[in-house]
Amino acid sequence: MSADPGDPAEPARSHEPAAPTTRPAEPGGRQPLDGAAGPRVPEPGAEPEPGAEPEPGAEPEPAPEADGTWQRMHPVTPLVRGWAALAVLLFFVVQQRGESFVAGEGPGGADAGAGPLGRVQLLVSLGLIGGGVLVVAAWAYVSWRVTRYRVGEEVVELRTGVLNRQHRRVRLDRLQAVDVVQPLVARLTGLSELKLEVAGGSGSDVSLAYLRSGEAQRLRRTLLARAAGVGVDEAGEAPEAPEREVLQVPVDRLLLSMARSAWPVVGLVVVVALVVVVVVTGEPGIALALVPGLFGVVAGVWGAFARGFGFRIAASADGLRLRHGLTETRAQTVPPGRVQAVRLRQPLLWRGPDWWSMQMDVAGYAGGGSDDAGKETVLLPVGTRAEAVEVLSLLLPDPGCEDPAGVLAAGLAGTGREHGWVDAPRSARWLDPVAWRRLGYRVTGTALLARRGRLVRQLDVVPHERTQSLGLEQGPLQRRLGLATVVAHTTPGPVTPRAEHLAAADAADLLAEQAARARAARRSAGPELWMTSLARSAVQDPAAATGAHEPGGTAGGPAAGAPAARVVAGEPTTTREEDVSPPVSREEPRWREDAP
Image (cartoon, rainbow, N blue to C red):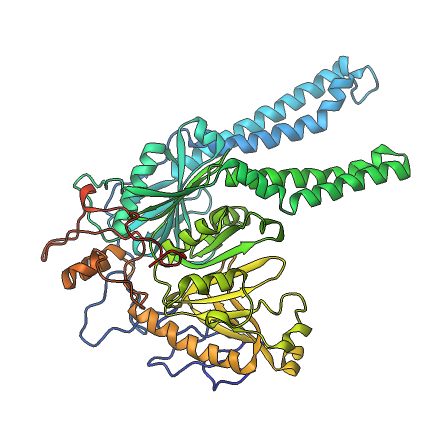
């Protein structure tokens, strides 16, 4: 059962302390946390912060018009977009007509392929191919002609559609991530696709395909700078922010991790099934029915290898940079504070080398297709524990507890109540006899950690300010055993933090306390323009902007890798290449065992 935060703390209901404002509940019976999912209410007479949501009840402010000029995509775009349709058409014609041409047979008999009917059939096939090419080429050209975009100080506009016209306007203060994607054909022509991910649900992303690779990189830098509240030069260009490479996944480790995964087992089962079918029936043709399954295994293995090939992570002033891909290269830039939740996962066969994979929830990524979402939400395909901890430290630099290394170690591989963890009671063994000792949660000053899984270990980490709503689930068996499950809802994605099969009293306490923590953290979080937040902190406290203070328990400070900017009172916030400092190793991540 799912419950709304708002009732007294009981096992079958959820709790939400009274909020100063009332908002309608979300679809599905959940109500957003005040200050966590909805807009904050400013003080009377106070000016709204840049990028802040309008006050509830007020008329929504329309996005401003872009002040740039309308531009078209690269002229080669129709060729890059249309080749796939042509390939499908050619495959269809060859499949339907190819066998007859090779055998020299037409509709009239064995030798009809050389007669008039055979020649007519050949001409018809060639005509179909030629007509298909003309239709696809014409459609791609018209689509390219009507597709235009322009970039302004606060928005990006895109016009598309031949039959159904669309005019989309994206606010840069809602920008969640910027990706530069190069499919194989686009790489051969020197083009790139620029994808803008915004927090708007399914279909909210904007794709500028295709641009010259240099133009796509320049536009990426400009959009990230404007989204951060940083001024650019008169030409509308922003310098490339320096970066520090964090890690690179070796190819041999990627291959070994795949060999230790479920793919070899599935492939072996398919091959054994093929052999058994052929031996028992004596008909090799029957085994052809299992060939698609074998192709599926091969495609899955190849896809995992191609996505993880050359995986690199770098920390920069404009966010976390991820680069990976073999046939299709992808360069992702996730600005500070945009990661909603993180999952660390370790399959059983990875325990020997102590490897871990990481996934993330980012608003906007979940709105794409399933294939794109699988590529975009991978934070680390395979890495050592030290590398996984370092990446976690970039996303959540302040653990908010006294013994972060012990807390994290207990979450990754521990059991019981050591290091402050709250575990599931013994009665949970009836619902999860294998992993009930691993079930539990830990709350720090900055995040909620939830662990589960014995054969496949999992640890979910969600910052308090990213908790949008809370739910309490209790099935009939859980009610009889006095258990309940608490779910922390963030943006849609692969990570759903769950504290499963807790004692009913512990679940009720977690629900009530986490609601209060999420509201407090959300109110103290900075505005969407993260460089503007840094500039304000520099004016009020220069030591805070440069990182001189020790990390505290609040979640509203600059994220890891935030730049040190020179700010002059009364002048617009601008940065130059020498004004932005990349993250350096002068301060070790506090999650590490050797951290101070």
